[in-house]
Image (cartoon, rainbow, N blue to C red):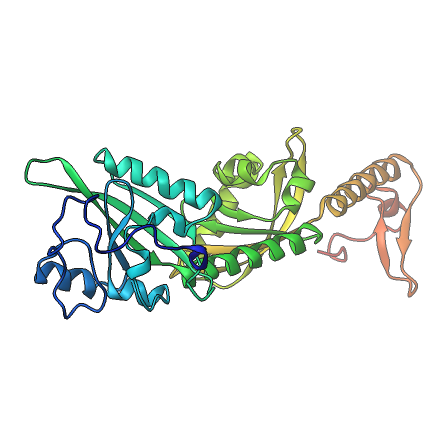
Length: 331
């Protein structure tokens, strides 16, 4: 941390830089600098909103912009001149800084992100780029380091990740299936409940077109419903079959809402497989009963509590028992 830094040299010591004692910035510059910078270059560096630094090839600080000093809450830069910039960092971030310096020294541009608090201990995250500065002969003579304060962005990302983690934890214990679908035919996001129900992982479901999961007989209808939604129509409800990883199918009842401007659909589904199986079993049972009832010569009918006929055989026995003229027969 910066509070642990101390100067390893004096701004008057120029032997390491090959500079004369007179090679300093103008007296109007608030902080001393062990290298000579033209007034225009100095103004350009100081006009940046970032923390701009010039380093020697060993990574020691030769210059830091006024804005950089303010961001780090440094009142006097002098104790930090000719000290290792990597010492501003700790742990893996320090190793990343050393690696960036080493790459820039060979002529490459290197970037990394890391955490470095201010001199007063205020948390700060930085996006740093270290670039080579070449002399007239083309050789790398110094390094330019630009560190951008990304603290607000990092906090926003952390908040978003935390919110997503809470959402995923909540949806993991829920029973509904949730999806976000793009107009490219792919799921952009699916809830963890899909893996429990269908066996497919989130990565598998978002990396394949949704048509690969839908029963082939249901794809045309689903495509029409999806196109209707992307056209801006209201919410809808429909059923289709989704393939389990073991090859079987589950019936899903969908409800969705489209956002045409963003070309996305938010959908929620519930598993109705047991209900559909019960409906199919009931229809098959009714069909078998009718076949048996029509096979017997007697009249068979079922009435409700008020005597209204709900079912009767169609084997001709009722016609023979109660003959009616063609005109009087119900049409």
